[in-house]
Image (tube, rainbow, N blue to C red):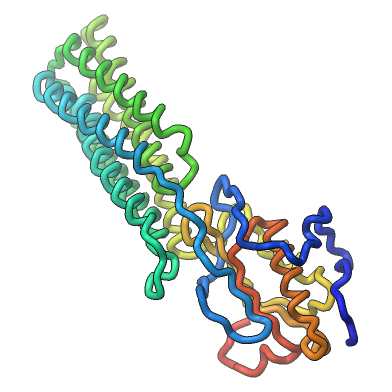
Length: 353
């Protein structure tokens, strides 16, 4: 197979001329608006000889500490105010919102610590640095949210049967204070709410706090206008109902990253088809995708090419084209592609297909 250059792949459309630039540096930054793919374990920082190429270096971690610190300060101040209000009024809605705010304050503290750790550089022992700490922090926050929701649901049912007297004016005052502060936190975090799992969890906590404060205000108005004390318990149950789905979604998404599932939106069959469309590629196996952290997808694959490509020095060009294809079509810049001659995959019988 005396071929000296990789031509256009049969049946493979790379979209534009940019994808043909073999000198293209695959370390360029892509804006990943959401977790778009996931790849198998990234084997960072070592070479395996001809045909095995790694993308070295870890993408820069965005610094969200200032916004998290502002939100943490606001939430902690509101926590003190609402705790005093819950004692004075005896309101379940305000107590639930205060407990929720306590967990949010803890969660924002965790998020702030995680954001600080995530900025630490990678090392030979921690090849991705502390990038995945954001996933662990988000999962912890989701668990806290779920616990608060369960408590609020239980207490709400109990108070529906025996509603206590709740002073509406005091409840309204503390509800308005809480709502104003929570809306301020939402405004601070909203612009970066999809940047990382950590920021997403922090934003969801602030948003659910704001919704809880709305519930407190509504309950206070109903009690003031009608004297119906069960409105407080119903508001507490409503707050719990708003928290549960958000906690579940966050737990599901973070668990998917930790389990290294292929992310939503990435079809590995399509990835395989694109790689097979590159000229001289005869097979693809050991194809994996996962996410290390937000905006950091990785992919690995073993690609079979003709023997002649190794003899005539053609393999590096094929490797560049495969990596360019994966980067251009699927926005995965950290890829590990191992080129193999036909039959090589059968050498080790322990390898799974």
